[in-house]
Amino acid sequence: MPSSADLTTIDLPDFGMPSTEPELGEEVYRSRLATLRSRAAEEGYDALIVYGDREHFANISYLTGYDPRFEEALLIVPVDGTTDQVTLLVGNEGRGYVDNSPIQSDIKVELFQSFSLLGQDRSESTSLTTLLKENGVCDGMKIGVAGWKHFPEFDNSETALEIPAYIAETLREVCGAHSAVQNANGLFMDSQDGLRSRNSVDQLACFEFAACHTSQAIRNVLFGLEPGMSEYEAVELMELNGIPLSCHLMLSSGQRAHMGLPSPSSRTIEHGDPFTTAYGAWGALNSRAGFVVEDASDLPNSIDDYVEKLVAPYFEAVATWYEHVGIGVEGGELYDHIHSKIGADFFGVELNPGHLIHLDEWVDSPIYEGSEERLQSGMALQVDVIPATGTEYFMTNIEDGIALADKDLRNEFKSQYPEAWDRIQQRRTFMQETLGIDLRPEVLPFSNIPAYLPPFLLSPDRAMHLA
Image 1 (tube, one colour):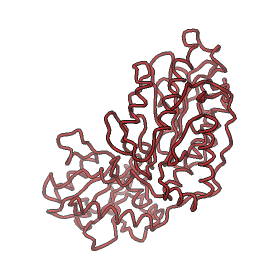
Image 2 (cartoon, rainbow, N blue to C red):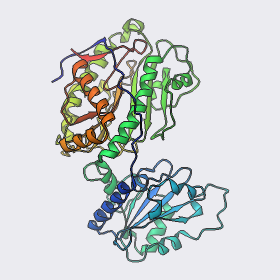
Image 3 (cartoon, rainbow, N blue to C red):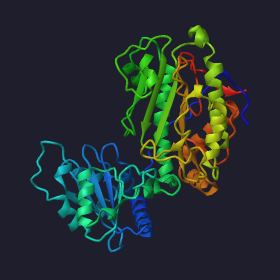
Image 4 (cartoon, helix red, strand yellow):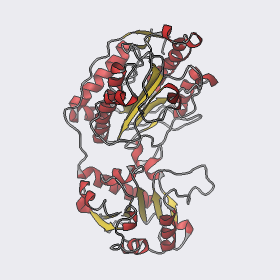
Protein backbone atom coordinates (compact mmCIF):
# COMPACT_ATOMS: atom_id res chain seq x y z
CA MET A 1 0.00 0.00 0.00
CA PRO A 2 1.27 3.50 -0.74
CA SER A 3 2.86 5.41 2.10
CA SER A 4 2.95 9.19 2.38
CA ALA A 5 3.95 11.19 -0.68
CA ASP A 6 6.55 13.90 -0.71
CA LEU A 7 8.56 16.01 -3.10
CA THR A 8 12.13 15.07 -3.95
CA THR A 9 14.76 15.48 -6.63
CA ILE A 10 14.32 12.76 -9.24
CA ASP A 11 16.36 11.88 -12.32
CA LEU A 12 13.73 11.09 -14.95
CA PRO A 13 15.35 8.56 -17.31
CA ASP A 14 15.32 8.79 -21.07
CA PHE A 15 13.19 5.79 -21.95
CA GLY A 16 13.85 6.15 -25.67
CA MET A 17 11.69 6.71 -28.72
CA PRO A 18 10.50 4.22 -31.36
CA SER A 19 12.73 3.66 -34.37
CA THR A 20 9.89 2.10 -36.39
CA GLU A 21 6.12 2.51 -36.44
CA PRO A 22 3.95 -0.60 -35.95
CA GLU A 23 1.42 -1.21 -38.71
CA LEU A 24 -1.82 -3.15 -38.87
CA GLY A 25 -2.00 -5.54 -41.80
CA GLU A 26 -5.01 -6.38 -43.94
CA GLU A 27 -5.57 -9.61 -42.01
CA VAL A 28 -6.29 -7.56 -38.87
CA TYR A 29 -9.10 -5.62 -40.55
CA ARG A 30 -10.60 -8.70 -42.21
CA SER A 31 -10.60 -10.48 -38.87
CA ARG A 32 -12.34 -7.51 -37.24
CA LEU A 33 -15.05 -7.46 -39.88
CA ALA A 34 -15.57 -11.21 -39.53
CA THR A 35 -15.89 -10.90 -35.76
CA LEU A 36 -18.30 -8.00 -36.14
CA ARG A 37 -20.49 -9.98 -38.53
CA SER A 38 -20.61 -12.87 -36.09
CA ARG A 39 -21.51 -10.62 -33.16
CA ALA A 40 -24.10 -8.77 -35.24
CA ALA A 41 -25.71 -12.03 -36.30
CA GLU A 42 -26.02 -13.05 -32.65
CA GLU A 43 -27.92 -9.80 -32.07
CA GLY A 44 -30.26 -10.57 -34.99
CA TYR A 45 -29.03 -7.80 -37.29
CA ASP A 46 -29.21 -8.23 -41.05
CA ALA A 47 -26.74 -5.44 -41.72
CA LEU A 48 -24.73 -2.82 -39.88
CA ILE A 49 -24.43 0.83 -40.83
CA VAL A 50 -21.36 2.57 -39.40
CA TYR A 51 -21.35 6.37 -39.53
CA GLY A 52 -18.22 8.50 -39.35
CA ASP A 53 -17.09 12.09 -39.67
CA ARG A 54 -13.98 14.07 -38.87
CA GLU A 55 -14.54 13.94 -35.11
CA HIS A 56 -16.23 10.54 -34.93
CA PHE A 57 -14.02 8.37 -37.08
CA ALA A 58 -12.94 5.57 -34.76
CA ASN A 59 -15.43 2.79 -35.56
CA ILE A 60 -15.01 3.09 -39.34
CA SER A 61 -11.23 3.36 -38.98
CA TYR A 62 -11.17 0.33 -36.68
CA LEU A 63 -12.91 -1.76 -39.34
CA THR A 64 -11.25 -0.48 -42.50
CA GLY A 65 -8.25 1.76 -41.78
CA TYR A 66 -10.15 4.57 -43.53
CA ASP A 67 -10.84 7.71 -41.50
CA PRO A 68 -13.10 10.51 -42.78
CA ARG A 69 -11.16 13.73 -43.22
CA PHE A 70 -13.23 16.72 -44.39
CA GLU A 71 -16.47 14.83 -44.96
CA GLU A 72 -18.80 12.26 -43.51
CA ALA A 73 -18.79 8.60 -44.51
CA LEU A 74 -21.12 5.62 -44.15
CA LEU A 75 -20.01 1.99 -44.11
CA ILE A 76 -22.52 -0.73 -44.99
CA VAL A 77 -21.60 -4.16 -43.59
CA PRO A 78 -23.79 -7.08 -44.67
CA VAL A 79 -24.17 -9.78 -42.06
CA ASP A 80 -25.60 -12.75 -43.97
CA GLY A 81 -22.19 -14.12 -45.02
CA THR A 82 -22.86 -14.15 -48.77
CA THR A 83 -20.07 -11.64 -49.33
CA ASP A 84 -17.03 -10.31 -47.52
CA GLN A 85 -17.30 -7.03 -49.38
CA VAL A 86 -18.37 -3.88 -47.57
CA THR A 87 -19.66 -0.68 -49.14
CA LEU A 88 -18.32 2.75 -48.24
CA LEU A 89 -20.30 5.88 -49.11
CA VAL A 90 -18.02 8.92 -49.41
CA GLY A 91 -18.08 12.47 -50.71
CA ASN A 92 -16.01 14.03 -53.48
CA GLU A 93 -12.80 14.34 -51.50
CA GLY A 94 -13.14 11.05 -49.71
CA ARG A 95 -13.21 9.00 -52.89
CA GLY A 96 -9.47 9.05 -53.58
CA TYR A 97 -8.53 8.64 -49.93
CA VAL A 98 -10.07 5.15 -49.75
CA ASP A 99 -6.74 3.92 -51.10
CA ASN A 100 -5.43 4.56 -47.58
CA SER A 101 -7.26 1.44 -46.41
CA PRO A 102 -5.23 -1.78 -46.24
CA ILE A 103 -8.36 -3.64 -47.43
CA GLN A 104 -9.31 -1.31 -50.26
CA SER A 105 -9.83 -4.35 -52.52
CA ASP A 106 -12.65 -5.47 -50.20
CA ILE A 107 -14.38 -2.09 -50.26
CA LYS A 108 -16.95 -1.10 -52.83
CA VAL A 109 -16.80 2.70 -53.01
CA GLU A 110 -19.99 4.63 -53.74
CA LEU A 111 -20.09 8.38 -54.31
CA PHE A 112 -22.72 10.16 -52.22
CA GLN A 113 -22.11 13.82 -52.89
CA SER A 114 -24.32 15.12 -50.10
CA PHE A 115 -21.37 14.19 -47.88
CA SER A 116 -19.27 16.70 -49.84
CA LEU A 117 -18.60 20.22 -48.61
CA LEU A 118 -21.00 23.00 -49.50
CA GLY A 119 -20.62 24.48 -52.97
CA GLN A 120 -19.03 21.37 -54.46
CA ASP A 121 -20.61 19.46 -57.33
CA ARG A 122 -23.50 17.22 -56.32
CA SER A 123 -24.79 16.26 -59.77
CA GLU A 124 -23.19 12.83 -60.17
CA SER A 125 -24.54 10.76 -57.28
CA THR A 126 -27.93 9.19 -56.76
CA SER A 127 -30.13 9.42 -53.67
CA LEU A 128 -29.28 7.86 -50.32
CA THR A 129 -32.40 5.70 -50.60
CA THR A 130 -31.22 4.24 -53.89
CA LEU A 131 -27.66 3.70 -52.63
CA LEU A 132 -28.89 1.84 -49.56
CA LYS A 133 -31.22 -0.39 -51.59
CA GLU A 134 -28.59 -1.12 -54.24
CA ASN A 135 -26.19 -2.19 -51.52
CA GLY A 136 -28.36 -4.66 -49.71
CA VAL A 137 -30.51 -2.65 -47.30
CA CYS A 138 -34.17 -3.44 -47.86
CA ASP A 139 -37.63 -3.62 -46.37
CA GLY A 140 -38.04 -5.99 -43.43
CA MET A 141 -34.40 -5.91 -42.33
CA LYS A 142 -33.20 -5.25 -38.80
CA ILE A 143 -30.36 -2.73 -39.04
CA GLY A 144 -27.76 -1.88 -36.41
CA VAL A 145 -26.35 1.65 -36.53
CA ALA A 146 -23.05 2.67 -34.95
CA GLY A 147 -21.77 6.20 -34.71
CA TRP A 148 -19.99 7.10 -31.48
CA LYS A 149 -22.42 6.91 -28.57
CA HIS A 150 -25.26 4.83 -27.11
CA PHE A 151 -27.80 5.81 -24.46
CA PRO A 152 -28.55 3.16 -21.80
CA GLU A 153 -30.14 5.90 -19.67
CA PHE A 154 -32.91 6.52 -22.25
CA ASP A 155 -36.26 4.72 -22.15
CA ASN A 156 -35.94 4.30 -25.93
CA SER A 157 -32.28 3.28 -25.76
CA GLU A 158 -32.68 0.62 -28.49
CA THR A 159 -33.81 3.08 -31.13
CA ALA A 160 -32.13 6.32 -29.97
CA LEU A 161 -29.62 7.31 -32.67
CA GLU A 162 -27.03 10.09 -32.67
CA ILE A 163 -26.26 10.08 -36.40
CA PRO A 164 -27.65 12.85 -38.68
CA ALA A 165 -31.45 12.80 -38.77
CA TYR A 166 -31.71 12.55 -42.58
CA ILE A 167 -29.70 9.31 -42.55
CA ALA A 168 -31.73 7.81 -39.70
CA GLU A 169 -35.02 8.79 -41.36
CA THR A 170 -33.97 7.34 -44.72
CA LEU A 171 -32.88 4.07 -43.11
CA ARG A 172 -36.23 3.73 -41.37
CA GLU A 173 -38.12 4.47 -44.57
CA VAL A 174 -36.14 1.83 -46.46
CA CYS A 175 -36.55 -0.79 -43.71
CA GLY A 176 -40.23 -0.07 -43.26
CA ALA A 177 -40.32 0.45 -39.49
CA HIS A 178 -38.93 2.84 -36.90
CA SER A 179 -38.09 -0.06 -34.55
CA ALA A 180 -36.12 -1.90 -37.25
CA VAL A 181 -33.21 0.56 -37.05
CA GLN A 182 -31.43 0.28 -33.73
CA ASN A 183 -28.41 1.67 -31.92
CA ALA A 184 -25.54 -0.84 -32.19
CA ASN A 185 -22.69 1.21 -30.74
CA GLY A 186 -22.38 -1.26 -27.87
CA LEU A 187 -20.95 -3.78 -30.31
CA PHE A 188 -17.92 -1.52 -30.63
CA MET A 189 -17.74 0.60 -27.50
CA ASP A 190 -19.30 -1.19 -24.53
CA SER A 191 -16.72 -1.19 -21.74
CA GLN A 192 -17.05 -4.94 -21.13
CA ASP A 193 -18.06 -6.52 -24.42
CA GLY A 194 -17.31 -3.96 -27.12
CA LEU A 195 -14.92 -4.99 -29.87
CA ARG A 196 -12.75 -1.97 -29.11
CA SER A 197 -12.62 -2.57 -25.35
CA ARG A 198 -9.85 -5.17 -25.81
CA ASN A 199 -6.91 -5.00 -28.16
CA SER A 200 -4.49 -7.25 -29.99
CA VAL A 201 -0.75 -6.99 -29.47
CA ASP A 202 -0.38 -5.12 -32.77
CA GLN A 203 -2.94 -2.50 -31.77
CA LEU A 204 -1.34 -2.08 -28.35
CA ALA A 205 2.03 -1.59 -30.00
CA CYS A 206 0.51 1.19 -32.11
CA PHE A 207 -0.82 2.80 -28.94
CA GLU A 208 2.60 2.59 -27.27
CA PHE A 209 4.13 4.27 -30.32
CA ALA A 210 1.61 7.11 -30.05
CA ALA A 211 2.12 7.40 -26.29
CA CYS A 212 5.86 7.80 -26.74
CA HIS A 213 5.24 10.87 -28.87
CA THR A 214 2.48 12.44 -26.78
CA SER A 215 4.30 11.92 -23.49
CA GLN A 216 7.64 13.09 -24.90
CA ALA A 217 5.91 16.25 -26.08
CA ILE A 218 4.57 16.96 -22.59
CA ARG A 219 7.99 16.12 -21.13
CA ASN A 220 9.58 18.68 -23.44
CA VAL A 221 7.20 21.33 -22.12
CA LEU A 222 7.82 20.41 -18.50
CA PHE A 223 11.57 20.73 -18.90
CA GLY A 224 11.60 23.69 -21.27
CA LEU A 225 8.91 26.02 -19.96
CA GLU A 226 10.00 29.56 -19.06
CA PRO A 227 8.15 32.72 -18.05
CA GLY A 228 8.02 35.19 -20.90
CA MET A 229 7.18 32.56 -23.49
CA SER A 230 3.88 32.84 -25.27
CA GLU A 231 1.61 29.82 -25.07
CA TYR A 232 2.31 29.23 -28.76
CA GLU A 233 6.05 29.17 -28.03
CA ALA A 234 5.46 26.64 -25.26
CA VAL A 235 3.72 24.37 -27.77
CA GLU A 236 6.74 24.67 -30.06
CA LEU A 237 8.71 22.86 -27.35
CA MET A 238 6.61 19.76 -28.09
CA GLU A 239 8.34 19.20 -31.45
CA LEU A 240 5.13 17.74 -32.90
CA ASN A 241 5.58 15.31 -35.77
CA GLY A 242 2.10 15.39 -37.31
CA ILE A 243 0.63 12.09 -36.14
CA PRO A 244 -3.19 12.31 -36.18
CA LEU A 245 -4.80 13.96 -33.18
CA SER A 246 -7.55 12.42 -31.07
CA CYS A 247 -8.56 15.81 -29.64
CA HIS A 248 -7.58 19.47 -29.80
CA LEU A 249 -4.17 20.17 -28.31
CA MET A 250 -4.62 21.98 -24.99
CA LEU A 251 -2.26 24.44 -23.33
CA SER A 252 -3.25 27.45 -21.24
CA SER A 253 -1.97 29.63 -18.45
CA GLY A 254 -3.32 32.21 -16.04
CA GLN A 255 -7.08 32.40 -15.58
CA ARG A 256 -7.79 30.37 -18.74
CA ALA A 257 -5.95 27.42 -17.23
CA HIS A 258 -8.79 26.92 -14.76
CA MET A 259 -10.98 25.79 -17.67
CA GLY A 260 -8.51 23.04 -18.59
CA LEU A 261 -9.62 22.68 -22.20
CA PRO A 262 -8.47 25.85 -24.05
CA SER A 263 -6.13 25.72 -27.02
CA PRO A 264 -2.96 27.83 -26.81
CA SER A 265 -3.01 31.54 -27.50
CA SER A 266 -0.53 34.38 -27.86
CA ARG A 267 -0.79 35.11 -24.12
CA THR A 268 2.57 35.52 -22.37
CA ILE A 269 3.14 32.94 -19.64
CA GLU A 270 3.98 34.73 -16.42
CA HIS A 271 5.83 33.71 -13.27
CA GLY A 272 3.29 32.41 -10.75
CA ASP A 273 0.70 31.37 -13.35
CA PRO A 274 -1.38 28.22 -13.05
CA PHE A 275 -0.60 26.14 -16.13
CA THR A 276 -1.99 23.06 -17.82
CA THR A 277 -1.37 21.19 -21.04
CA ALA A 278 -2.60 18.01 -22.74
CA TYR A 279 -1.75 16.39 -26.05
CA GLY A 280 -3.66 13.45 -27.51
CA ALA A 281 -3.06 11.34 -30.61
CA TRP A 282 -4.73 8.16 -31.83
CA GLY A 283 -4.37 5.75 -28.91
CA ALA A 284 -2.71 8.05 -26.38
CA LEU A 285 -3.08 11.22 -24.34
CA ASN A 286 -0.88 12.81 -21.69
CA SER A 287 -1.52 15.79 -19.47
CA ARG A 288 0.11 17.66 -16.60
CA ALA A 289 -0.78 20.74 -14.57
CA GLY A 290 0.89 22.88 -11.93
CA PHE A 291 2.22 26.36 -11.20
CA VAL A 292 4.90 28.29 -13.08
CA VAL A 293 7.08 28.72 -10.00
CA GLU A 294 10.25 27.22 -8.55
CA ASP A 295 8.89 26.29 -5.12
CA ALA A 296 6.13 26.97 -2.62
CA SER A 297 7.73 30.24 -1.53
CA ASP A 298 6.73 31.69 -4.94
CA LEU A 299 3.06 30.98 -4.31
CA PRO A 300 0.65 33.32 -2.51
CA ASN A 301 0.69 32.76 1.26
CA SER A 302 -2.88 31.51 1.12
CA ILE A 303 -1.85 28.48 -0.97
CA ASP A 304 1.75 27.88 0.10
CA ASP A 305 0.57 24.47 1.34
CA TYR A 306 -0.32 23.51 -2.26
CA VAL A 307 1.75 20.32 -2.15
CA GLU A 308 0.60 19.23 1.29
CA LYS A 309 -3.08 19.99 0.77
CA LEU A 310 -3.58 18.97 -2.86
CA VAL A 311 -0.64 17.40 -4.64
CA ALA A 312 0.48 14.87 -2.00
CA PRO A 313 -2.96 13.31 -1.35
CA TYR A 314 -3.61 13.33 -5.09
CA PHE A 315 -0.37 11.50 -5.83
CA GLU A 316 -1.09 8.97 -3.10
CA ALA A 317 -4.52 8.35 -4.63
CA VAL A 318 -3.11 7.86 -8.14
CA ALA A 319 -0.38 5.59 -6.74
CA THR A 320 -3.08 3.50 -5.05
CA TRP A 321 -4.92 3.31 -8.38
CA TYR A 322 -1.75 2.07 -10.09
CA GLU A 323 -1.12 -0.51 -7.39
CA HIS A 324 -4.62 -1.97 -7.56
CA VAL A 325 -5.36 -1.83 -11.28
CA GLY A 326 -5.16 -5.27 -12.86
CA ILE A 327 -6.91 -8.09 -14.67
CA GLY A 328 -10.06 -9.18 -12.87
CA VAL A 329 -10.29 -6.05 -10.72
CA GLU A 330 -13.76 -4.51 -10.50
CA GLY A 331 -14.08 -0.95 -11.71
CA GLY A 332 -15.94 0.00 -8.55
CA GLU A 333 -12.92 -0.99 -6.49
CA LEU A 334 -10.71 1.52 -8.31
CA TYR A 335 -13.40 4.17 -7.93
CA ASP A 336 -13.50 3.53 -4.17
CA HIS A 337 -9.72 3.70 -3.82
CA ILE A 338 -9.65 7.14 -5.43
CA HIS A 339 -12.63 8.53 -3.55
CA SER A 340 -11.48 7.17 -0.20
CA LYS A 341 -8.43 9.42 -0.52
CA ILE A 342 -9.59 12.43 -2.52
CA GLY A 343 -13.35 12.13 -2.52
CA ALA A 344 -13.93 15.28 -0.46
CA ASP A 345 -15.64 18.20 -2.17
CA PHE A 346 -12.40 20.20 -2.14
CA PHE A 347 -10.76 17.86 -4.67
CA GLY A 348 -13.59 18.12 -7.17
CA VAL A 349 -13.09 14.67 -8.74
CA GLU A 350 -16.28 14.30 -10.78
CA LEU A 351 -15.35 12.33 -13.92
CA ASN A 352 -14.60 8.62 -13.93
CA PRO A 353 -11.16 7.97 -12.40
CA GLY A 354 -9.89 6.19 -15.51
CA HIS A 355 -11.41 5.07 -18.80
CA LEU A 356 -10.77 3.02 -21.92
CA ILE A 357 -8.78 4.69 -24.66
CA HIS A 358 -8.48 3.76 -28.32
CA LEU A 359 -8.18 5.76 -31.54
CA ASP A 360 -10.61 8.11 -29.82
CA GLU A 361 -9.55 9.58 -26.49
CA TRP A 362 -12.48 8.17 -24.51
CA VAL A 363 -14.30 4.98 -25.54
CA ASP A 364 -16.23 4.04 -22.39
CA SER A 365 -15.37 3.45 -18.75
CA PRO A 366 -15.80 0.39 -16.54
CA ILE A 367 -14.66 2.53 -13.59
CA TYR A 368 -17.59 4.15 -11.78
CA GLU A 369 -19.27 3.99 -8.41
CA GLY A 370 -20.58 0.50 -7.70
CA SER A 371 -19.20 -0.96 -10.95
CA GLU A 372 -18.92 -4.74 -10.96
CA GLU A 373 -17.35 -4.70 -14.42
CA ARG A 374 -14.01 -6.49 -14.34
CA LEU A 375 -10.92 -5.27 -16.14
CA GLN A 376 -9.64 -7.61 -18.83
CA SER A 377 -6.44 -8.47 -20.63
CA GLY A 378 -5.99 -6.35 -23.74
CA MET A 379 -7.65 -3.27 -22.31
CA ALA A 380 -5.93 0.07 -22.94
CA LEU A 381 -6.69 2.43 -20.06
CA GLN A 382 -6.15 6.11 -19.44
CA VAL A 383 -5.08 7.06 -15.92
CA ASP A 384 -7.32 10.12 -15.73
CA VAL A 385 -8.03 11.48 -12.25
CA ILE A 386 -8.75 15.22 -12.46
CA PRO A 387 -8.97 17.20 -9.21
CA ALA A 388 -10.65 20.39 -10.41
CA THR A 389 -10.80 22.22 -7.08
CA GLY A 390 -12.39 25.40 -8.43
CA THR A 391 -10.29 27.31 -5.89
CA GLU A 392 -7.03 29.25 -5.97
CA TYR A 393 -5.28 25.91 -5.39
CA PHE A 394 -6.09 25.27 -9.05
CA MET A 395 -5.32 21.61 -9.77
CA THR A 396 -2.68 18.97 -10.31
CA ASN A 397 -2.86 16.21 -12.88
CA ILE A 398 -1.45 12.91 -14.10
CA GLU A 399 -2.91 11.55 -17.31
CA ASP A 400 -1.00 8.64 -18.80
CA GLY A 401 -1.85 5.47 -20.70
CA ILE A 402 -1.37 1.85 -19.68
CA ALA A 403 -2.40 -1.55 -21.00
CA LEU A 404 -3.32 -4.73 -19.18
CA ALA A 405 -1.80 -7.90 -20.58
CA ASP A 406 -1.95 -11.47 -19.29
CA LYS A 407 1.09 -13.73 -19.50
CA ASP A 408 0.39 -14.90 -23.05
CA LEU A 409 -0.15 -11.35 -24.31
CA ARG A 410 3.00 -10.18 -22.53
CA ASN A 411 5.03 -12.92 -24.15
CA GLU A 412 3.57 -11.98 -27.51
CA PHE A 413 4.44 -8.31 -26.96
CA LYS A 414 7.98 -9.16 -25.91
CA SER A 415 8.52 -11.41 -28.92
CA GLN A 416 7.00 -9.20 -31.61
CA TYR A 417 7.93 -5.73 -30.32
CA PRO A 418 11.15 -6.08 -28.31
CA GLU A 419 12.09 -2.39 -28.58
CA ALA A 420 8.76 -1.27 -27.15
CA TRP A 421 8.89 -4.04 -24.57
CA ASP A 422 12.24 -2.74 -23.33
CA ARG A 423 10.78 0.74 -22.88
CA ILE A 424 7.85 -0.72 -20.95
CA GLN A 425 10.16 -2.61 -18.60
CA GLN A 426 12.29 0.48 -18.00
CA ARG A 427 9.15 2.44 -17.08
CA ARG A 428 8.00 -0.27 -14.70
CA THR A 429 11.39 -0.26 -12.99
CA PHE A 430 11.34 3.52 -12.65
CA MET A 431 7.84 3.56 -11.20
CA GLN A 432 8.63 0.84 -8.70
CA GLU A 433 12.19 1.67 -7.66
CA THR A 434 12.19 5.46 -7.93
CA LEU A 435 8.58 6.52 -7.40
CA GLY A 436 7.77 3.71 -4.97
CA ILE A 437 4.68 2.51 -6.85
CA ASP A 438 4.30 -1.29 -6.92
CA LEU A 439 2.76 -2.67 -10.12
CA ARG A 440 1.12 -5.97 -10.90
CA PRO A 441 2.95 -7.87 -13.66
CA GLU A 442 0.10 -7.29 -16.12
CA VAL A 443 0.38 -3.48 -15.97
CA LEU A 444 2.25 -2.06 -18.98
CA PRO A 445 3.01 1.69 -18.75
CA PHE A 446 3.12 3.42 -22.14
CA SER A 447 4.12 6.94 -21.06
CA ASN A 448 7.65 8.37 -21.12
CA ILE A 449 6.69 10.40 -18.04
CA PRO A 450 5.10 7.50 -16.14
CA ALA A 451 3.37 8.94 -13.05
CA TYR A 452 5.99 11.69 -13.01
CA LEU A 453 4.48 14.74 -11.30
CA PRO A 454 6.46 17.96 -10.76
CA PRO A 455 4.09 20.45 -9.08
CA PHE A 456 6.43 23.44 -9.56
CA LEU A 457 7.09 23.71 -13.26
CA LEU A 458 10.25 25.79 -13.01
CA SER A 459 11.79 22.95 -10.95
CA PRO A 460 10.91 20.03 -13.21
CA ASP A 461 13.46 17.71 -11.62
CA ARG A 462 11.59 17.85 -8.29
CA ALA A 463 8.68 15.45 -8.44
CA MET A 464 6.42 13.43 -6.16
CA HIS A 465 7.27 9.98 -4.89
CA LEU A 466 6.17 7.68 -2.08
CA ALA A 467 8.45 8.04 0.90
